[in-house]
Image (tube, rainbow, N blue to C red; front, top):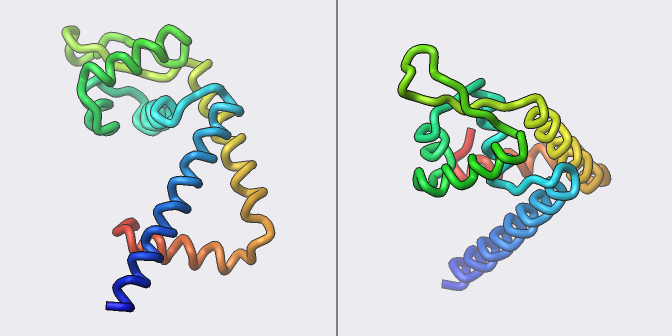
Length: 142
């Protein structure tokens, strides 16, 4: 029972660390390019995919179509993404990044990576790599 309690304490500490890390990343992205984490995820997804339907994007984000639509509308009004006709199905629209969206993504990514790198710079590289491996393994990642 005592070992179980210690594992629970470690799990709680890990949750706190993950939440703090997420909060810092969101802050740095807002400071770097004025984007929220969901907006960053949309920009990253469209960068990787080239284009996507709204339903594919909603599925990736794990949100409803109306929620994805509101997010896309706001990003479209800022000129970050645009809708274009699907060449294979004229009834369907595809979403894609604009040049401003690419620049915004690059800026947000650079700010977050720069700040994170600065925070990790004092930790020996091997320790960072091992921590990442352990965390990814525990979470079922690659």
